[in-house]
Amino acid sequence: QVQLVESGGGLVQPGGSLRLSCAASGFTFSSVVMSWYRQAPGKERELVATITMVGGSTNYADSVTGRFTISRDSAKNTVYLQLNSLKPEDTAVYYCNAKRSLTGWSFWGQGTQVTVSS
Image 1 (cartoon, rainbow, N blue to C red):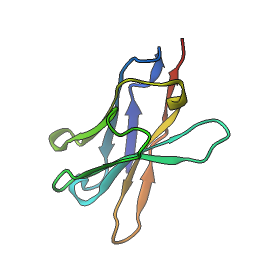
Image 2: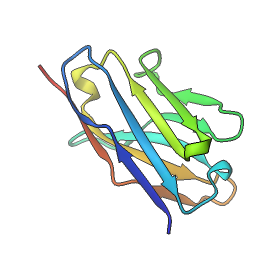
Image 3: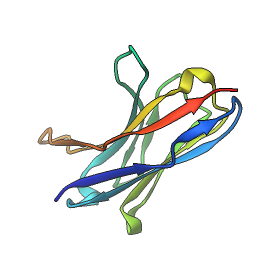
Image 4: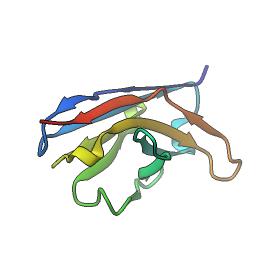
């Protein structure tokens, strides 16, 4: 059974930090590209960051470059998103996604809420 379980969201003040985790199971971790997306109320889901399981290449949305860091622990089948210097506009539900580029297979986690507010 394929599962992506996100954790680590919460309420944080502007300028603060959080680390999100995405634990994967039920598929071959090394065969996919892992991404974090986010969706704010009334807005479309947007890509935040991507990492390849082989090689560890990363890409980021312009809005988070320099503040967020995506990483992986292949031994734990887990992907992380470190969120630093958080802003109120980072408030959203953050989703983990696994995708096989060649086949188009894609799977989503249930999401974790991040709220940045004073």
